[in-house]
Amino acid sequence: MSSSLRERLDHPVIDADGHTIEFMPQVAEYCREVAGAEVARQFERSGCLDGLPLALEARANGGPGLAIRPPWWAVPARNTLDRATAMFPRLLYDRLDEMGLDFAVLYPTHGLFALGLEEDEVRQAACRAFNLYHARLYGEFADRLAPVAVIPMNTPGEAVAELEHARALGLKAVLLGGMCQRDVNGRRRLDVVGFHNAYDYDPVWAACERLGFAPAFHSSGMGWGSRASDKSYVYNHIGNFAAAQEAICRSLFLGGVTRRFPGLTFAFLEGGVGWACNLFSDLIGHWEKRNVEALRHYDPAMLDRAELERLFDRYAPKPFVDKKKELDRTLRILSNPNEDPATLDEFAALQIDRAEQIVELFVEPFHFGCEADDPINQFAFNRRGNPFGAELKALFSSDIGHWDVPDMSGVLAEAYELVEHGLITPANFRDFVFGNAVSLYTAVNPRFFDGTVIAPHLQESAS
Image (cartoon, rainbow, N blue to C red; front, side, top):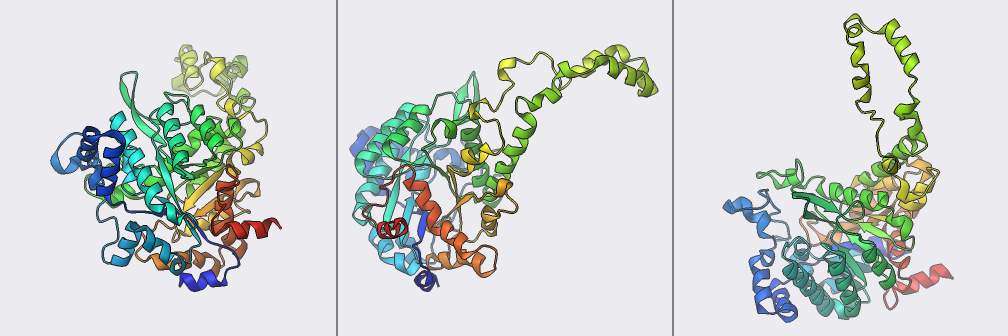
């Protein structure tokens, strides 16, 4: 089992994404404390105390909102010990050795839904209440547990305010909302942070850098496109986290965030790493064909009209001949000569002139949360398959507390099966469960692990 495996390893194990299951009456009490009785009542009416915003529950009562099949039976039940472990800080702390974990970064369960609350005052109060909950109840276990702060991102101002408050509470890790539904020019759209957003989020990234927070995202893609079934949660759930994290990652990259804030690292959770391998390769391919110099190959001004007409006269099928006068209109399709020159370079924010530079801007800062039973995790370490021989920074992310972990004590052993099957090396596994998490957190906050059980191991590595 996991505990015996941990004894054989010569390095610690850091869980980059475990989950608490909040005791919601206590969260409600903290909401009253931070915002008063009326806002707390609105928070209760939002449905968050029942685990889902009312928008998701609309399918059951015919009301307005997202009429989709939401998560159901999503937390441990038959395994009562695991359910209690996710609820009670001391029990989780006492069971870490049984799970083979030295240290765990903990994300909320119900708190994830707080980011989607539409009323500004309620959303901000709810996030602050969840942050008080985790800071106060888990603070005494800081040598092995690090709960995250929930940071609302509907505006940069509310995000910066809660980042400051999270630091004041002593929280070291953060969960940012990666997107929100917004009315723009009279229509509803999904606004993703980082790229062509309604707001400039650079003050948020600057605050993260100043305060020592590595932005992490745990957004859901349920309700988008085809993932909107009112019959099947499984149909909605498959691939939803990958879709959401890919959208955020692509937005941050093309928006030049990693160029402007080279000191920041980012985490994209619960979507695995397969999408990231594909995005990394796809970005390189698109840059090679669509960078501003390569675009000259497709510039309508480069078309030799005389040569085209000669070829038309010689080779055009007979039905085309009497329509030759319409050639100009045909040539403009997907080849408009009047494109605004200022918009042609869609990679301008990256400030690069070689595809190899994408490694610095993508591979170095981005980290990808991978669940233990995902066989695709091996692709992160496939130097022969990834462009430029890169290894992507996969993070061991247990997801304890949720339905995909029937037994908390077996998660680490399940992750190690990739080594046993010869799909990754022991060195890869060390990076997966230890080195990449250290990279994520210490790049922006070198003292992240001070006072924890991880600190002596970092000192050994440095010596």
